[in-house]
Image (cartoon, rainbow, N blue to C red; front, side):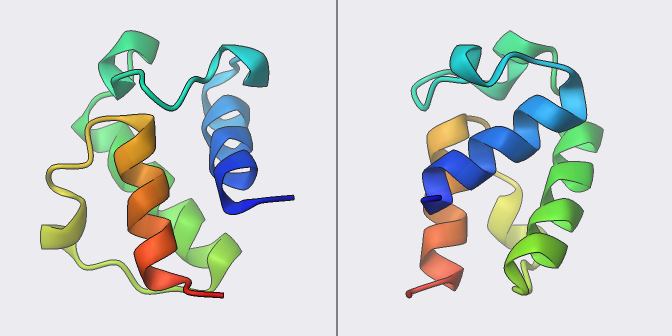
Length: 77
């Protein structure tokens, strides 16, 4: 499973969404995900991908693609 698919699955699972509806170009707000929810997503990403994400790094992560890019930048493999 690719990083993109794993990130989409995490978002879908955490917010009770159909994974097919989680699109890379969508803003997180389109799924009623707010800044506190992003913290939960980041914590899950850190655990699942064994990475460390600093607060400042995810402050502008307001879309699915930005979350994916953030994980990709931490997980070069």
